[in-house]
Amino acid sequence: MRNQPSTQKEIPHNISYTVLGYGKPLMLLHGFAEDASIWENQIAHLSAKYKLILPDLPGTGLSKEFPATPHSTIDDFARLILQIADAEELEQFTLIGHSMGGYITLAFAELFPERLDGFGLIHSTAFADSDEKKENRKKSIEFIHKYGALRFLETMIPGLYTEAFALNHPDVIQDHIKPASGFKDSVFTSFYEMMMKRPDRRHVLEKFPKPILFVIGTEDKAVHLNESLDQCQLPVDHQVYILKNVGHMGMKEDPSIVNKALEEFLTYINKK
Ligand code: MLT
Image (cartoon, rainbow, N blue to C red; front, side, top):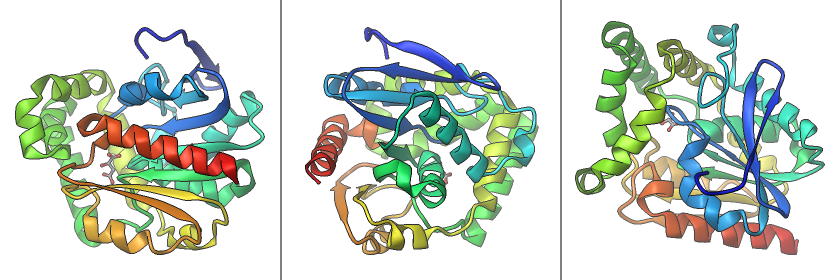
């Protein structure tokens, strides 16, 4: 968002979002341990043609944590996205979510399908958490309680990238950790609780009648390649981009391909 004329806005409960650019509306929803700044490499590219709406989920970026966050669900966050869409008077828009942002995107597509002209999942999945994943999340929650969020982030974030990328781009890793190190510990633990509780949403992929985009990293350790490939067979109308030598962070690891995928997907939607 640096160097771009943008407007900072809020909906009730001090939930902040940034609006910039002109054109058809496109909302980009960040994932876990991120805020809207994670889209920095996409913004310059897309804001020339699209009106970008970039929410900071509760407790991240400029948004306040919900008082009721420990009891929130992914669906509650989808309702927040609706409030932002209403505040911006978006009759229909495209919603793209990274990872946890993708879980919210799927909930939104189930609850309010008529508001979308298409949606995209970037390194995300419609499958619910496996037992193994839930166990790992519980261990992460214990780690955060014991050592605090900063040590957790320093351990967790580099693993979202390929080993080679993390080694060669310490600056990108630090840029990722920095904003997240300002979030309260309870933001991380409540997001983990929300993700553990979320249902399987493969039926949303099967039933959604409009285009769906999948961006997949072959080296993604958070959303495995096989799971991603399985789910992208489900929709009636889909576009799939498989990024070689990319982990869970294509927006940072290979921004030009992610930008191309978004651009082509949006052009495809606009031609419909
Ligand atoms: C994310 O990047 O949002 C998380 O990796 C999602 C997850 O842990 O499932």
